[in-house]
Image (cartoon, rainbow, N blue to C red):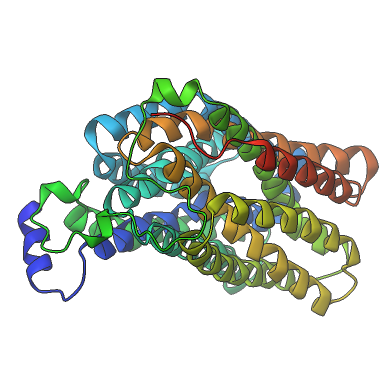
Length: 422
């Protein structure tokens, strides 16, 4: 496929890296078939149809998060050894299959296996593969490039839940309309991403002739930058305080991220809003995520990425608390949008910070060992909010807990060292 890439390169007036961003972005878009916001739309109808508890349904996401802890290092190794393309192609193909097969599930074990596979793909192979290949193509404008990945994810995050709910509505909102919705989502995964990745993805800029390499050099105009062209080994990363502190920050922030996302639709329905209103609130949150991705992408190129991380994490805690104020459609929409802004930051900032500190050459393997913390946070956050609801009958005790955790994460970001020795 290098010949196709070279042909495209000769006929475009811009850096081929942006084509890589488009291909990687398509995988970030379709991975939302297994997103917490997507399953959030299915929590209510599936629990009503199958007689399962909400905790049982969201437990599939939590279990997959635990398994991802062990899968992510392997994904990072494969990506570092063979490149992102092969793992992204396999991930998209398998994601489409498992999503379609969810429509035929009647037992918890079947659902756990199928959705669990999709969730592992979401949080491990695509998460690491897409951002790693973009990092390989960008040093200068890295934040903007990763920001576009975040924007693509946010579009999928907003459109997939809405698409799922629309399909259910068109099918008459019958008790089993959720089954048709899963089939349509699975087919869309194949159509939207597989061709683009197959024909255009190139793992490394060295694989094709590049006339303009300004994107592979550090721009010195970044204020207080920690960004460097130097790379460190996985062994050196393990020995640094930054690796462990930032990995744990990833656990804490995604504990909050998933705890809110996974239960947001059910929470809004419990507050008296209709399912379609709740689904649209998720779409508005996705719009906020896209906005946050672009803003933080720009900010990490212009300012110290760790400072941007601190601000985003602080806003994560504040916006979580705001959900306690939901009392109307307007407040639900507004707070969902504001919370979405910080989710955009979480998509962009961590991979940029890690690449800035540890360099791009070994970032695949390094992220293979930081992502398990993210997966663990996703598993614990979603499950904890579900347990709080099951024992108290309300989600409202969850939000103050999330705010406290965010403050702790901010303190850790401050304490993490700025640089390490290569």
